[in-house]
Image (cartoon, rainbow, N blue to C red; front, side, top):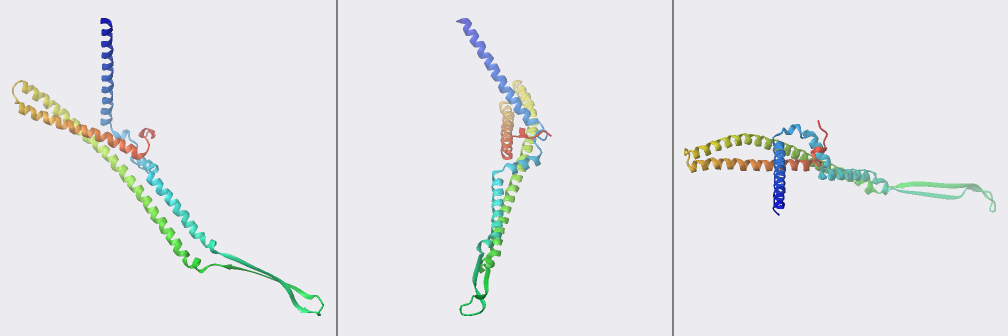
Length: 242
């Protein structure tokens, strides 16, 4: 029983150590991603924008609407043929003088006629119908272009935001190092009786403040990175390395 207890304790110790190493490894990877130069790993901003536009559901919708309006303009321009009516007439009979009461006719004649009838409303309103269809097309193109501009602006802003957060984290990391050094010195002076508890508390509050700011920036960094990746529509790992 004693041996089993020792083995169980050893197993738990190994598991705990392994878990701790795993957590430390994940934290190390996160820290590495915070301090690497993003410009070396992120795709170029132009590629991100073009890919986001190509994958945007809103832009795809307006592309389809533009194509629909183009078909409508084409149909309106051809609809004059729908209202055209073609008429024809054929007649046969005797023509010329008659030789006698009982004689056959001297000539046989045929009359053939054809005509086209176009309603006046088709001619008069055609230009207005074409103009209305073209106006719908121009309006839809404008909405599609606006959607593209919005996507471009959104990607650009998120990209710049990500770089700005990383720069803030780098600055705060330097400040944290200084704060940690000051805190260690303050604790040593407190142990030697050179600082009061209130003075030590001031340094502790300052260190806590910077730690909270760092955690907020760190969370904001990963959220912005994920948001940018979602807006682009594909993982950044799918882009070719430059």
